[in-house]
Image (cartoon, rainbow, N blue to C red; front, side, top):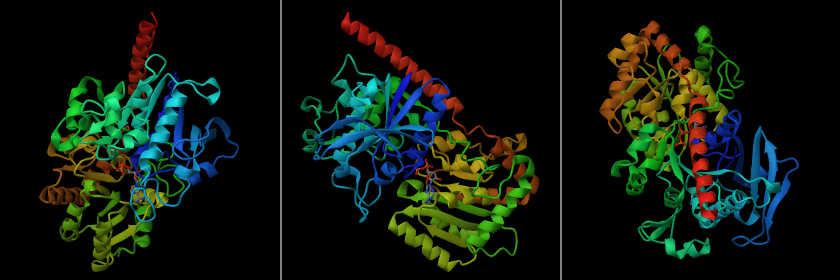
Length: 489
Ligand code: ADP
């Protein structure tokens, strides 16, 4: 079968978070299951530049204010289709924001263009007759694709929409619906209207043949007002079409026995891991007069991630004898607060504000634990990388964190099954209890290493989940074929 991914991020070309890791890893795994995937991405300048000799497979003189082309190429083992539209993507700033950290004012056009071109390719225009059986749209940036596809009910491919994070809903004023060519008749509660505005995310939820999200727990949480962010009603309405499929990680580029960014080690030779902790302590100028547990964070700094709780708990973390390292960027207030904390606690707290992929690898390899105190977390990848690298995750019991970490409660410790520590989301007291338990287990070297080996043995790859995606794809394609032959007959 053939599948078209539509997404705004893809590792290693463009990334702000976990979406990029998923879109960069899943196609290759699906390929081994007989599913040929091409990935349609916006042609951000860096992405266009990495194409040696792209072919033009589609062009239009004017789409939302300028000419567009779709370029086909291959890079890092991924079949790419790039939207070459300089008026939309050729600019300095981040993927969604200008240098002033404000959203680009034409984001509705930038991502409607992505979805519209995805629809053209989905219907077999251009691309040398390549026509996918299924279009898989990721997050709000691709959310209009299932809606645009609906306008071609007989010939359209099946569609899947994946929620990577329901907090980002692609909301724009009503008048933009006309600018991006949405049918006025669908501007209502049961369509793409969202409390008087339009929502690209809601369009994906309402019009896709199936909805997936990135963990079973998040799939059920989304049905409640506490997590559904005003879209829980839509999710409940479509509940028999909503599937939770856990994210995996790319275990070949994240392999502690071959990773060029670190001192390599294997579960059998865990002692070799220590060189990474020493190197990290030097890099962050931590005083290494005795062996203290090293707690670390690699994260976007946003309210979702619960790092304000961690800030409050830093005195307790230090009293318990731990050190803290944080790599992150985002909210200016959090950036300043963590930086201040580092200057108040030299040698015990080390902070790096910024985005640094290689440093993230060094942190996973050199830390004793990775903290993820999120208030909600659709899946979370950091706790998977942590386990793959022998750093025990300390995570809030929510979303995919709850699905992927085995808590060190008394029973799991006794059975030797634990891989990390879970605590109540949003509770500083519960976080501090988890920190204290982690310190206690850390002092028992055998118990700690047993947990590390469990963590290192966890199946954090994509195989199982790719099988689940494939079976949903097959089901939708069968339904579509039945529907198409019924409409013709
Ligand atoms: P989210 O998608 O909400 O940001 P995830 O846990 O799903 O959270 O994915 C985060 C990804 O981004 C992980 O690969 C993590 O290692 C990476 N990451 C986050 N912040 C940074 C940073 N400052 N530098 C390097 N990598 C980062």
